[in-house]
Image 1 (cartoon, protein in one colour):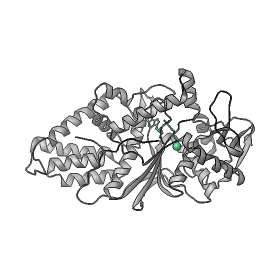
Image 2: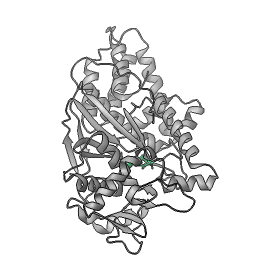
Image 3: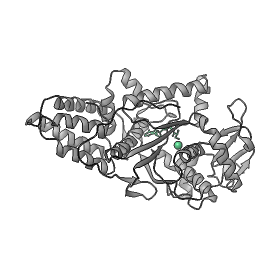
Image 4: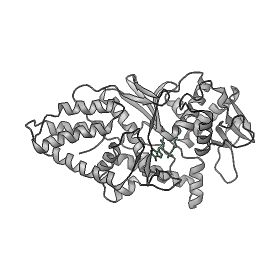
Length: 409
Ligand code: 5CA
Ligand code: ZN
C-alpha cells in the first residue's frame, strides 16, 4: 500500500554523529554501525483507534533514529507494516457493526494524515498483512518442513523449542513470558500445545471470518508474528540494523518474530539491535485501545493544535521513559513553540554553531530529545535577553530543528 508524503530534511553544516542507543537484547547501550544504507523495520499499527499519543510517541522515537542517520549522510531504508487483519481488528469491526476492510482502510488513511502532519518520515515500503499473505504461506510451510511447526485442530503453531536462541530478545523467564503471552494475544492455556508459549503461525478459517488460500496449510489467515517476519525478510533478509516498536512488543512479538526468522534461515540474529519505546499513559494507565483512555492526534488537530506543538510534546519526554499525557504537557509544548518561533523570526541572533552540535550530541546519546530541547531553549533565551549579530543564526536554528527534530518553525 502507499505510505505518506515525505517532508524535506534540510542538510546541516558539519558532521553528524553515530547513534548510541539502548538495545533490549543486550540490555545496554550500543553504538550502531549501519552501512551506507541503514535498514530499519518498525512495527506498524493495527488499524483501529489510530493515531493515539502512544502510537505517535513510538513513531516519533524511530523518526529520530532516521534523522540521526540522515545527518550522517547515510540513506535510510525504512519498512513498516499495517496489521490489517488480526483478531482485535475483526472484533472491533464486529462490535461497531462495520466492515473490517473499510475500518482498516479508514484508520490507515487517518494514520497517514497524522504522520504527515507530524512530519514523520514515511517508510519506503508500507506493507499490509493481507498483501503479505502470499509471502507468509511458504514461510509457514518451510517451518513445518523443518519440524519447527505443528498442527492443532487445523491451526498451525510454531514450536519455541526449535530455536536455541529463543528468549534472547526480551531475556524474560518462563513465568513472565507466560503472563505476557496471555495478555498480548497469545493462548498459553489452550490444551494440546507442546509449549504454552508457542504462537500461532496460521489460523484455520473460522466461520464468518475472512480467510485466504494457504496452499498446503488450508484456508486460513496468518498469525501476527510471522506477518512482520515475512515483510522484514522480504525487504532486508537477516541482520538488518534495527527492529523497533513500543516496549509492549519486546515480548512476545519481537521475541517470536526473531525465533521464526532464525529457524527459517539458520542465521542469528534477525535484527542487530532491538529498540523499544516507553509507554504513554493517560489518567494513570497505559493508553490503550482496550481501556479506551485515548487522546488522538487527529482530535487535537481538529481542535486547532499546531502539529509542531504535538511533536514538541512528544519530544519533551525521553523515548524510553513511561510517561503520562496531560493537558499541561501540551500547554508547555505550545508555549515552547511560541518562544522558539519568536526567537527565529528575528533577522539575527547569537551564533547557533554550538547549538547544532549540542542537538547532535543529545540525540546521538540514546535519543535524548529532552536535552536537545533544553539546548534550543537556552539559545532562544539568549536571543531574547542578549540578542546577537549573526545573521545566519535564525536560519541555522530553523533548519537544525527541522532536520533533527522534525519540528517546522
Ligand atoms: N500491529 C502491531 C505491531 S506489528 C501493533 O502493535 N499495533 S498497535 O496499533 O497496537 O501499536 C502500534 C505501535 O504503537 C506499537 O509499536 C506499540 O508498541 C505502540 N504503542 C501502543 N500503545 C502505546 C502506548 N500507550 N505508548 C507507547 N506506544 C504504544
Ligand atoms: Zn510487528
